Image (cartoon, rainbow, N blue to C red; front, side, top):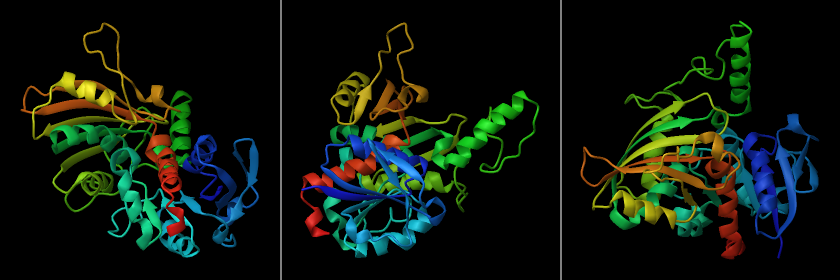
Length: 342
C-alpha cells in the first residue's frame, strides 16, 4: 500500500534534500505534497520526475498524508506538529522543538531503531541535531563492544547548518574580500569568510553554547544517561559537510586496529583509514557532499589516557545530518507496519 507524504518546509535546503532522498528510497510512495509558508505558495519544487507546487501550510489538509517530514524550524514545529499529528499523520521533525520531550522518541536508525515504536504518545518523532547524528553513528559500535564512558568532541560545522542565508553570507563575504568590499556579519556573530567562529547558537549560563548542550543531552538520550559529553562547536567557512574530532574514553580496552575492523562492519559507516600509507587517506567535508555514509578516518589510540581512542568523523549535514535520517525513520515506520497505530 502506498504511503502519502507532506514535506513541510519544502523550499529550504533540507526540504529539497528530503524530496530528493525520498524519491530514491525503497518506500512505495503515493502522493507527495510540498508545503511551506504562504510566501512560497505556488513555487515549484522537484520530486523525482514530478514537479510539485507548494501549498500553504495554513490551508493544507494534513489528513491526506500518512507522514509529514518537518523542516520548517522550531517555532513552526511547536505550533504545527501537534496539529498535524492530530490529523493522523506521523510527524518526523528536524528541528530542536521536540528532541528532549520525554514522550517523543529521538531516533537515529542505525543506533536506536527500536525507539521509533514509542511515537504513539504524541505521533511525533524527533530527528537529532546534525552534529549529534554523525557522532552517535560512529560511537554506537564502540559503545556496544566496550561501553563509551566519556566523549570530548570538537566540531567543524559548515554554514549550511545555519540555512541558505548563511550560505549566501559566506559567498558574498568571500567575493567581497577579493573586491575590497567590507560586508557586515548578519547571520553570524563575526565574519565567517576566511575565519572560524567558536560559537553556534546562543551561550548558556555555564559558558557552553546551546549547540554544545544539544550534543550532550541528545547523546545521553540516544546512547544512555551514563555517557558524558563535552563539546566545542565551531562554525567554519565551508558550504556543506560537518567534521568532528572525537576523543572517546571506553570502559574496556579496544585497540585502534580492532576499532577499525569493527567500524568497517557497522551500518551507516565507511572507514577510510590506512595510517601506514603514504597518501592522505582520510575524508574531508568536500569529499562527503552528496554521500549517504558517515565517514570515519584517523582512528588511533590516545597515548595519554587508557582505553581511549581518537576519531575523525565527517558527514554531509544536509543528508545524514537531516534529510536522510528523517527518510530512514519513515522507512522504519513503513517497513515495521507502524503507521496503522497513528
